Image 1 (cartoon, rainbow over the protein chains, first blue to last red):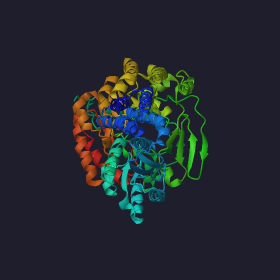
Image 2 (tube, rainbow over the protein chains, first blue to last red):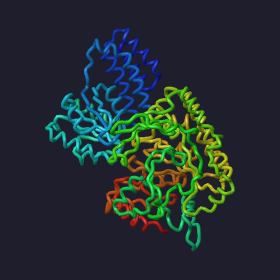
Image 3 (cartoon, each protein chain N blue to C red):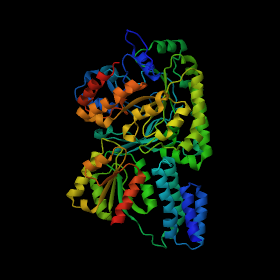
Image 4 (cartoon, chains in turn yellow, orange):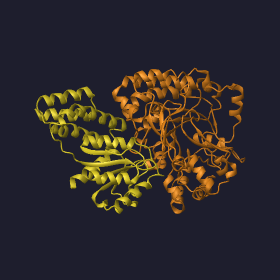
Length: 215
Length: 397
């Protein structure tokens, strides 16, 4: 019974039914005493995974991705009070930001929404972030992943500056660096010795999931 | 491909008209658009600076409501021998009237946030070292829901006389458009995606197709009405003189279009057919859509909508002009598609990019070469001149 209900939540999210329907199903699951961790993992995240796969397959596009993220946020709002009662394990920690000189954040914010919905703890430093601030936050949070975004070709070299600082401060081998944004390519990631470049938010999440699973 | 003209040289206008009608000109026209910051860089690198008179911040251009610095008094098109689509544009104002009063809302040592004429709030760097190199970041938008849309609509009255210039004397404009030779004449407006994303912001606009489809149908319907009624007088007056319609969208990202074919069919296609139908009835049947990103999944529908030209065809996003010509033939004329990243490298990389595309596309017809977006600031003057010199060898038939 509970499996059916969780499957129903996953399908409802994957098929982008309305927010009211998802909320009803979540309340039903809570009423049945299904643990919040299971609702999140086997219901919502499974549904979100399907959305990501449909996006990668060219069945869904940006509108669908953004709507799925908003449905997920609505669902998590209902579950929020229960998080305090149950310990939900985080998948990993990401320090995220748009590099110095660049104030664009649409792509970064889409990635953040998906990362949080997938179960990552995200420390978003915002836009136009100085290299030292990234380093400081990584040391403070002991995050496994650094996500750097740049829309502009003129500012993407900041990513190299940040990686240089990670090397200088001796923490480069403790953190995986993922770069994203319109200005970056896989080639560019290799040139600046980043660990990976994500061409879209969904690919970025998949990369992060693989990294934390390997640990 | 049918050949036009005779021994005498064709004008630039005749050349572009030939290409967009899939005919062969004497010399292939070549189109570029420049970021002003690129020109500023080039002045430092030896471009004749005495040609610059002023630099100003421009809040509105051709009704497209952009916001960037503009170098005045220097014409890169005649200097390099290329041209832009916008040589002779119908002087229509498709923006909100009255405009929002521009003002600084807040600022600190590093940024200023400004209320723009469109009602959007945008953030800009104040520091000189970044000012030139950064597009603004839009942080707030005037339309968020039904109520704010109804309010905004009051500024979108197509019959407002301020949409046409004060000197809108029809005969004079007919004469000017008739006699223009330096490029094509053009009518510009925003497509529904460009229109909506500009007043709602990309995330809100995209999500609203699911959250409030009724609102989106209403907006799409109003966009159709507003567009047709705004351009009606210009079309009536200049229908025999308008060579091309420029339809701004920017509706795709690297991965693909921002809206699915399903949404496009439901919310865009019916209204687009009405607008292109109106243009077609007036014998205006060449329409180029400006969109960055990967449009491939939508192309069949875009053609069905009545749009038959594409620019800039970003290689970085998977747009390939040669494949498109093979697939769509004379259903689409194409412009751009020379990979800016390869061209900016210069030397062999630049020559490979030009040589692998321009001769093939030139023979296929319906293609205007150019960089696959605006010429950006990473181009040095020397590399751009090298590219110009090489490209020009390919242009004559």
